[in-house]
Length: 56
Image 1 (cartoon, rainbow, N blue to C red):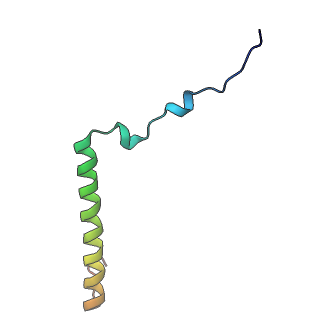
Image 2 (image 1 turned 180 degrees about the vertical axis):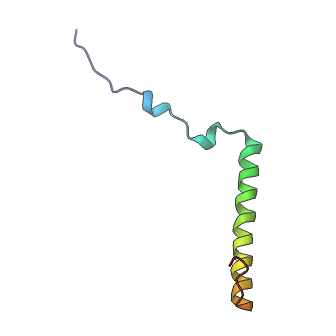
Image 3 (image 1 turned 120 degrees about the vertical axis):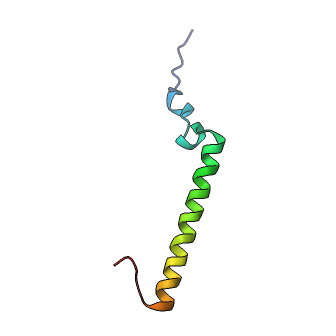
């Protein structure tokens, strides 16, 4: 009888952080990220249009 050494599967079963979060939390995070991106686009458009940067 021979012994076969198999690699550990411990690292293969790791779940990502997003997979552990509840569905509503992931939806909320996606909405917040989309709104932040929209706000950044609007601010860039305002600065381009007026030449005034309200962040300064």
